[in-house]
Length: 141
Image 1 (cartoon, one colour):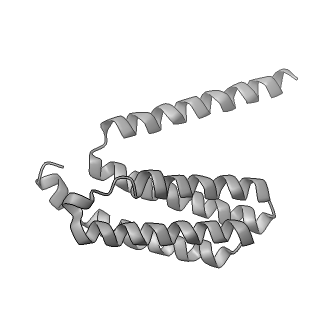
Image 2 (cartoon, rainbow, N blue to C red; image 1 turned 90 degrees about the vertical axis):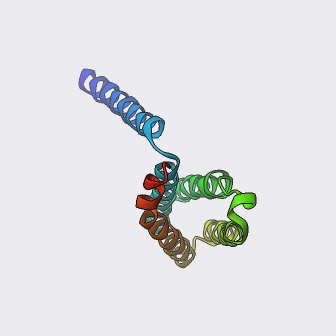
């Protein structure tokens, strides 16, 4: 029993350490880096959901998809500035809405193909976002 308690304590400690690492990364990140972190988090959640679908773990699939949805809706879409972003921000808002609908359908029907499409779209946007990093940094962002 002592070894099990030790392992549980280690797990809690590792989890806390991981959270501190993520929080430290967030606190020191530029706005551009924060958006990259959101893309990475959404894609990681989608990949986890795919694994849970394949394993038949419905509850964990739902949690992973909910996390991805939260990142897309309350992170990426919420960060858009329609005033400064103009047409591009509007197009991204529509794309994020489409991705959210893909995720909802994937959750409802356990469709890996919908997850694949959502992941591909997020990776495409993230790739473009990463390419503008040097310009964002040069401009002071």
